[in-house]
Image (cartoon, rainbow, N blue to C red; front, side):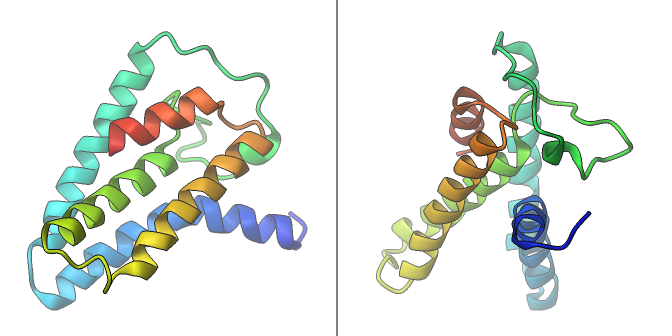
Amino acid sequence: MELNILTFLYLFFRLAPFILVSFFSLASFFNQDFKGLIYLIGLIFACFTTMMIGNVLPIPESSLPSEICNLITIGGTPGFTKLPLGQCIFGYTFSYLLFVIIKNNYALQNLPTIIFFPIIILVDFIWNLTNNCYGMLHLLISLVLSS
């Protein structure tokens, strides 16, 4: 794989969900609280629900995906769900944080979070659509189910 801006963007968008989950888990571990455990349980439930509903719904497959979509795989299998789990992780994390922010009326103190997540979700939408990894319907269903 050649090192250029496209490969750095690819690595960022493929690894960003793992980085988010790792950050919340490790922060909870070091702060000795249960917020990270609650986050992980909810995230596992959201991903499981997205996978199950995505594999049951008769969603038409997108046309031939680009080879860049499957450079990083788990166990050599290209995909075990029809819906993007990266979008699921972004959507769940944003709704998890937004719920606490709105409930405690901390919107002004958390403007960077409120601005960052919609931008990363939108850029991930554009990335998946441009590289023909998933269709618009796949991305929207994954985002709505996880939120």
